[in-house]
Length: 118
Image (tube, rainbow, N blue to C red; front, side, top):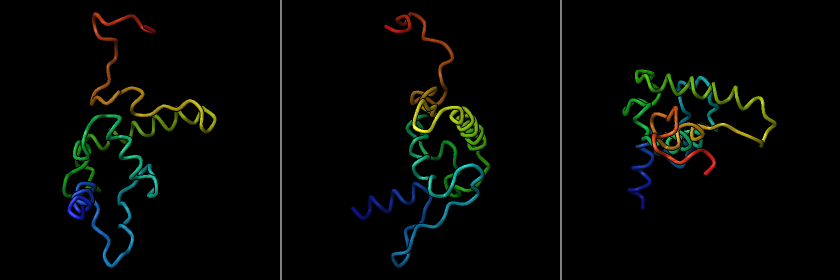
């Protein structure tokens, strides 16, 4: 179990706490708040059906070298802007709204599929 926990921490780009301390704060945040990062990353991972290294440089999660990270920031800003038009807790747009667990969202229904609403 400890090995699994250590692998998860390594995969998520965090170091295990030393001496029972808290996990180091995320670096290079431009949109998200530190307390929201882990929950948001899980949502993005599921919403796009990708792993962390799709957007992040494996050894340096703070790096902006991967262009997908820049695109992700733009998409986060877009969904935040859309959601700002709704009362809190009501209709919300997320990555999953468009991506449906696919790296690239469909822009039209698949050919030969059932008509919408069926």
